[in-house]
Length: 318
Image (cartoon, rainbow, N blue to C red):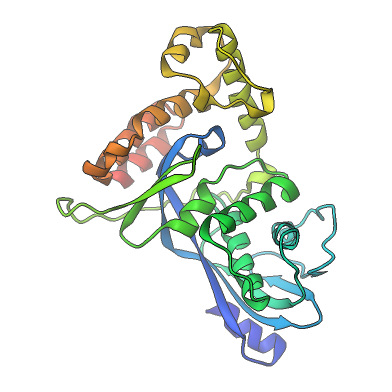
């Protein structure tokens, strides 16, 4: 790994360890987790590696092979405000972990991503990779759900991205040759093994040539649009509803959406897909195999506006 080579060249010593967190793909349910939808996903064998060594003075010193500028901060004195660079995800992780545990030991590290940034949950991967290393040097053990929620809090409360827990859950809970089924409303999940009746398959990932991050996208706006649609639909139907902040499309029965969807001037594809996906990702997929999920995904892609995306998606899943 290049991160190990660079670490040895820069610090003139072997790294203490190499942390790793995989990227994830979500055949069905991406971007509905923030609406408490039912999702599935799996980790892949590519991801974020970090060669690191503990620093007893409490300093965190990090360099990325994918981004310029070295990041440095005290693990016990993380800036309250984000700095606007790639390392905000790591500062957020240290701050969220430090609110629950006493952090004394920092680390020096070289971070390396094995695929282009964007689309595979690289931000969640780098947070979890860093968290696992920071926990190890400080003698902290996090249970899987605690790791997921700490990583999510780093993005929500520090970076400022109102993401759900799909990415973190796929990266922490996934196992080889199994599909993760997760209900993001109550965090119940199941790992579904590949059916013996399935033919051999491969998963293709296409790079569009564009690198992106959620914090620079309209992700938060899309989430607000979903909440606004849910709030309006529940109002039209005379349903009891909570505050806007606590309203989710998961709370809207499919029948209510069908009855009042025409009153929404611009609900967008996210509302349609969120409600549709939540209704077609029941636990019964356990007996159907991954192929059913892929074909259901294709049916949603057919509603998309980008023909090239549709063609690539269909080709990848058949």
